[in-house]
Image (cartoon, rainbow, N blue to C red; front, side):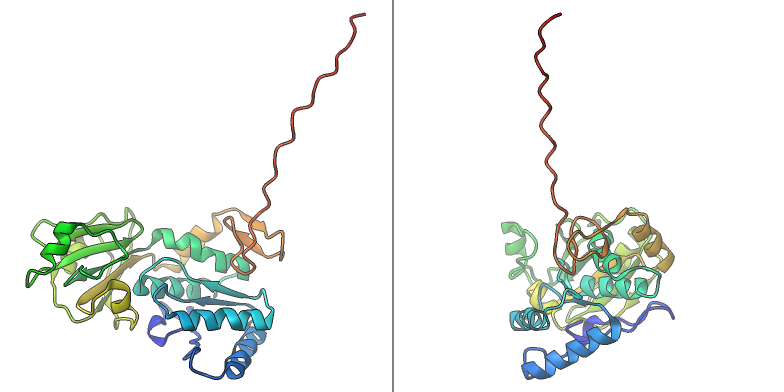
Length: 280
């Protein structure tokens, strides 16, 4: 992780602890390089998860460190999820790290598990929201004092004004919901958790990157997700595995997260022309 507040508490006793790469863009390059090299040697492979809201200097430093180490054992994973959703996904990967799965499968499992994460927020204003399409009416209503909006950014964009009867399309499977409160008060999420049939509702501190991602500090971020390790393991192992043709790691999906190689596309052979024969 690139930020300590993205390292959620362990879901169970088997969840692996997170490693936080602090202040990468502020520390001397050789110091950060030594730390990353030591982590790679200790663990064998690293999956570095960072949010799309992570400052660009930090992202550039990560790419620089990986290039200097000339290592395909470091995967930089940056899916399009809000910060709280990113933190939940990182914890799921930490859960899977305790299982008998290869590094390539664990890393590529992140792309699979994003499809089962429903991430959104209740916002006091959508005036600066650029992650989800916002209509002119919503922009105008965001200036009305007391207005609140419920937004889902993933897996598909949704936006409604918070009002009696307002709802959002949610997961069609059992999930847990985690909530992070910013500078906003709202009881609406309790009803949404019931409507989405969440097994439990847990609170966590708001990630520091969330106000930048959502365009306001007046928000309550939420994320509905799969929490049971046995379900996560069954989901990942049910997908066909293949070997990366470049680095040889076992992966799932169409791209190796470590070396970024995609399977070669084999063009079908042209049909063989029939030989002309002279009738006997």
